Length: 145
Image 1 (tube, rainbow, N blue to C red):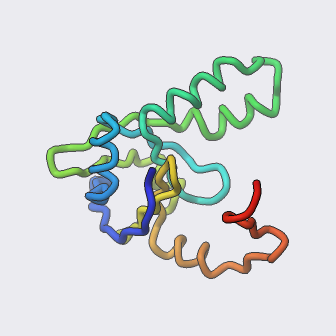
Image 2: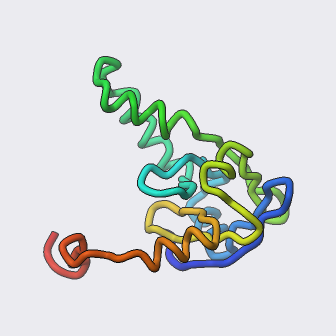
């Protein structure tokens, strides 16, 4: 499980350090790499541990190729996936197409989202956090599901 928000930089080659806390969690789970893909709900990159990616692939493989809604989502988001390894310094190389999708500039924010991680441009993250959040969309995370 990944929790917390961490500010980092991304260099001109597209390398950014995965927070130590997230690297440690991946190592403890025996997860040597992550899969980066477009996040479908806002301009961010989802970083999925291999085990989470494997479950997503199973869903994709089980879906009917005639289910247009499902296939559009696969085309738009799943097809953007890139499996990446961490280098010896704990950095990941974010492919140019994903950097463009998320609008990543010099400053980025890694956000732990439980089973996954998201990578935002710092300004986009601030905008997302400042956006109005209507009460009817809020969930009682501590009550009954």
